[in-house]
Amino acid sequence: MVKSYKKDYKFILNSHEQIRLKSFTAISAMLHNQGVEATIYGEDFSYIIADEDADELLNSLISLIKKAILNNLKKNFSNKKSLGYLWNQELHKTTLLLNASGQDWQGQRYQLWETPGNVSPKLDTWLYNDNHGNIILEITPTYPWHFSDPEPGETYISYAEFIKNYQPLLIRTIPKETAQKWLNQAKEIFKQLQLNTQKLSPH
Image 1 (cartoon, helix red, strand yellow):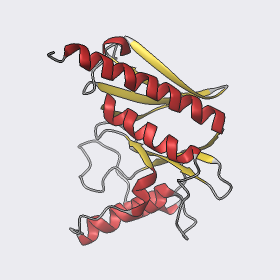
Image 2 (cartoon, rainbow, N blue to C red):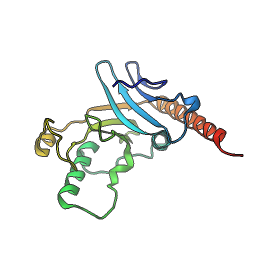
Image 3 (tube, rainbow, N blue to C red):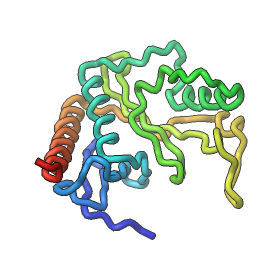
């Protein structure tokens, strides 16, 4: 069943790529806990990259964009592999060792969003500064069977096969002017959510 949305809010990345936030409810009436889906669109692709409560999705975007604009999201890894590769290795290690330390992996500070469990392909979206201070948006595949078995009829590959020739799905540089526009847009939506919530609060 195809979803019918009342609102489609665009975050323009460049002349042919953009991220759209979609909700069943128009932003003028949306509340904090209502679901928002984020999808990235290009000339020949579209991928769902998040589906969360509006406040969680926007808070993550606002927080990371602020840090990136100030060049406070530099990757502090000596390993030159992509964040997606390192994240998959971390998840695989956790699966094998059943690590119960409860400590977050250090790279998660760059994690913007992740796809919901029922969406394929499974992707993680990262935001960080490179060594030159550029703002980088990176979308990477995540092995779908780290913590679950394949469904009946699902095409399965081993983790070794998945990681062998691992590559990020998309890497883009976000100009600081664009990042500032995204920040302003996200703040505008979040402010509207607050106003909507206040209208329903008892006085």
